[in-house]
Length: 262
Image (cartoon, rainbow, N blue to C red; front, side, top):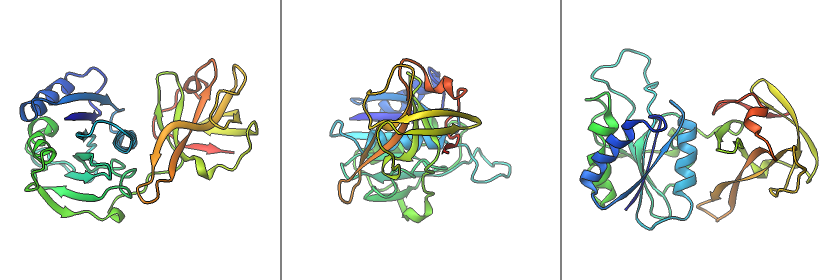
């Protein structure tokens, strides 16, 4: 089984090694790939759950995610309790197990064939993704349904915002949550973009590199997937600076900052 472990522990944090060990105790022949998202960024978590889960990959796949800001209740916590665990089954058979917090399920809620709670303690440890959740996740990955609880209605899950920074890749390209099909521009048409407090001119591109060196492009990016109902492609707009760094151009914005077309 191929396991994508998505969490906000921090790049290179030993927490990834600790959780990996626990998962391999229950699923010893698995391969685990770790993906670190910014602290408490349920938006980035949800984005990558969908990007990895709804696109082609190995037949036997589990996405195990943990980004739990514990913001569901502002009061003092008893026994380290936090947001509850959930299970989703995607149309291609990918199983998704992780904490339901913020936008973690927002990008897959209309694609999932199954959405259910997982009957496991919401407390018991400060490090629940290591100490409490792995056995349930491994059992579900192997087809055990005894942990599955109440059905979740997609209406209980917030919609993904359509005007945010979703990710900054290693080249400084800014992936956004702006759907490409909502942008009605012609190739090479000029546009003004605001990200946070920084404004810059850009050129709309059809997704190719047909923009001059040093030009900021606003174009359909490399991220997206097909809808479950009719196979219609979903693509997300991206900002890239050819020969430069769009993230630096906009003052190094954080994930979840607002992106506006002026």
